[in-house]
Length: 280
Image 1 (cartoon, rainbow, N blue to C red):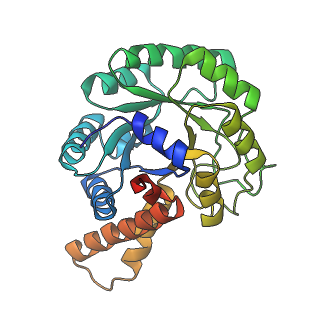
Image 2: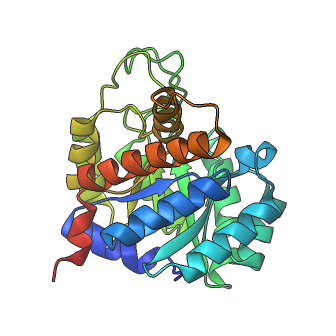
């Protein structure tokens, strides 16, 4: 069933766990994510990133998201990830996405507030929740340590100011992860995470979860992060599984990709302690 992330995040924040948000880029990936979630009887956030329009159009993503989300027997959130175009974000809100992200993190603080506030006001009137990003999660390609990534770390003061100014529903913060694959394992600022989590009541999101290390991600989930985005590790797992299959048969290769993604996502459900969702 398609739901809002609002109540899911309340439970995640109270019980200290994170919900995985895997990006889907085709029918095989979204179907695989829902099947894993149903197997574990746990919620899933089905994320479609604006940048992936070249692989899957918005219209296709909407149809797939609504179809698989509505028929799922677990809570599923259809989420627009890293939305940067206002018209597309409004379209997502109007046509069935339950959650949208406005990513204006590379803008000035004031401009980020301005853009986020406009989306929040539009979305809330239509029962849709909004995620925004403060600070900036850089790219992992040139990442060796927190000193040479292009990440801009989130401060407690800015997080507080931003939430108060925008009334955003969840906040992606920058504490040392990066998008994509890393050259080395990231150095996460857990003290910053603790400070922000203690200072705000708004659910916190971590981008750049892939390749961050199980120990790091587990600690993030237990210490205040309620949603963790995963993409690169899923497609890497799909590729790795294909390498194990000695065949030229399309269907066997396709099934290997699907199995790789499934095993990777199921692994992260354990790392994120998402099973706490079922606690009484």
